Image (cartoon, rainbow, N blue to C red; front, side, top):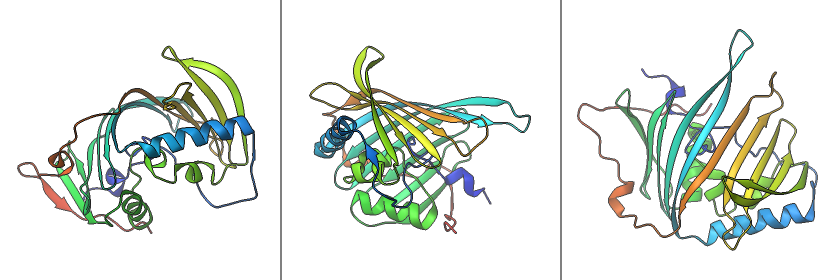
Length: 250
């Protein structure tokens, strides 16, 4: 039986499915700088207004070795979203090669290297489907915290403070640089300073682990008017692919 880890994806990429989630339990009101709050809300509202889009994400993740040294691994993730009930993520990286399909009825995760796949029945809206996958099976879809309709609430749920750092460039694009803190992680986000306030970079620092490993996601390519046919989101098992079961989150 294939290990459970093969079929777990973390945020963002996280996205599609890789990296620590940014939310936990609700705590006391956070001290968020008004300008940082305004920019984050603008990004969330703009993303919510998009009916379909694609994102190309470049991720790097620090891995702590038993020797105490820190190693970095990378992955490229392509996410396609068509609201309210279609999503696909393709991951190609140093440690994993996976695909995730959500067709409005089910979520399927396919491991290309091992030719195994698992499918679960889910609700018919994206937010409910992703919540069900996370709560029942510990499966985090890529960039789920960003593409959810309630992304602002998710991103700020466990934040203790938020600061506006300034205007900095990411690959030549001028962005608002924001810094948020939580008990166990700090995270930074760079949001495009334009009429299309798209996230361009994200860094999550794990404070609870020795060495403070980081997850970095770059969002260099957005397509806000793609043509996304129904069959793009439908999983067709390849020859000799073996179906297995998801393990419950507990």
